[in-house]
Image (tube, rainbow, N blue to C red; front, side, top):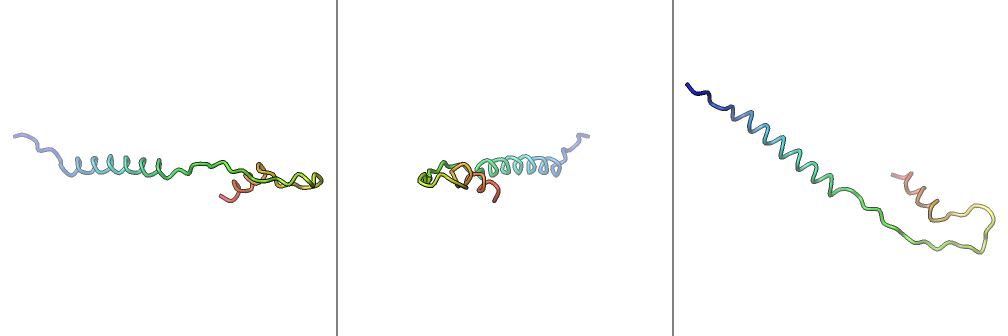
Length: 64
């Protein structure tokens, strides 16, 4: 007597492989791309606190 392959196990393994591949593809396309932005910096008042471009990008990174 020949042993029949377990089709349920094969189906499960195929589903896991396809699901993992789809998950990786979705994750790869969902990555946000960083965009460089230019901001005008007021240089007329050089005393005290100044919100420069690198400070603003740091604040943006804290938001999420």
